[in-house]
Image (cartoon, rainbow, N blue to C red; front, top):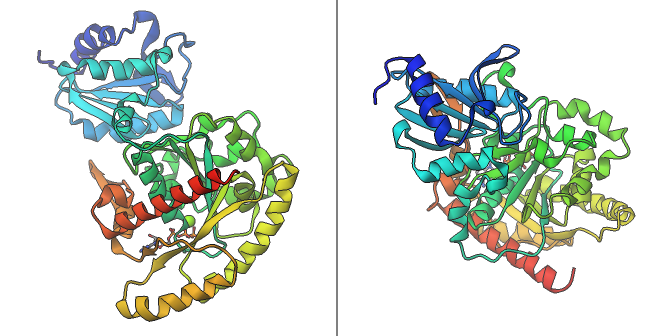
Length: 439
Ligand SMILES: Nc1ncnc2c1ncn2[C@@H]1O[C@H](COP(=O)(O)OP(=O)(O)OP(=O)(O)O)[C@@H](O)[C@H]1O
Ligand SMILES: [Mg+2]
């Protein structure tokens, strides 16, 4: 069937074909509905949802002229979704149909060739009782042979020295754990928001499009009513995607509010306890500072990884980390938490020059020993692929949209990917050993 214009796409395709296929009756869809300056072609509300109220699992459906390339309209759809807090969107021109979950394209198919699996996928969103919305991805996950662990493990990546590879470690470790079939949550506690960017959650190009300002980790830490599920975004830096609690540059200004709010320090600990059934691993990225955000991370964590380039200032910084840990471990007592398990100092951004590796590296590793921390056998060397993976963009119309990837997704056969695989093996082995010895 050929549609001649947008009206026909809306009437003949969306209203008479697509919505009935999705099992959506007339009481659950609204046409030409306006929210402030946003006018939606269609809003579909989930079964049992109050209408026309925006809920995260509502669906925005935008119809275009049959000759309009859909790529030209994805930015606007994403903006609508972000501003209205709606997680799902469909864009169709009657020829093709794209289904989005947050900013991720879940599938693109011929509009008249929707298969049962695609219809089921969308219905899962609109009929919440039917199953977990992420089941398209879990098909891949269930084929992986890694055992499921018994309880959620929280790992913080911290060093008070900047630029040593904390964010790079969080992103790539999260990607591997997700590919191995674990449910992973990343929490970005650094106002620089580098993890939020690297996870692919910051795809806007202007301040006006910033959809993180009003819902980010600050709101999670400062308001009792805000739960992790309310703030998570889907990180597109890896496949299967990983959930991310985003940070925001305004966190710096909000620091004093949290310092003066006694409940803030333990807020993350308490909120994580409520999602213990949902995740296998939580990875927390921290700022290069001894501030309240580092404190919150270390109060909430089970394990600690300390990436270090092993240079003199980084080594001297380890003394600060040591002193900070003493303080934090004392404070943890008040929350009936045992001391943090330091998994180790991770040699990171290490030069690949053979002479350096042979002569200087062993001396630098030796120098770290006096701080008393275990040292990882895995080493993350300095390699260009890591920067390139972060700089990846996709072109949408005239715009380069940031589309950063983990190095595992960008170049799965690279040396960096192998180094992070080794690191993941070592982290999992250390955690398993610790659990066996009785936590
Ligand atoms: N192994 C590596 N090889 C090459 N470049 C790297 C490597 N690790 C990190 N980088 C680059 O170094 C810079 C700092 O890395 P990263 O952001 O991971 O450090 P960080 O400790 O999180 O920094 P900050 O303290 O500012 O949060 C980034 O540009 C990153 O791409
Ligand atoms: Mg960082």
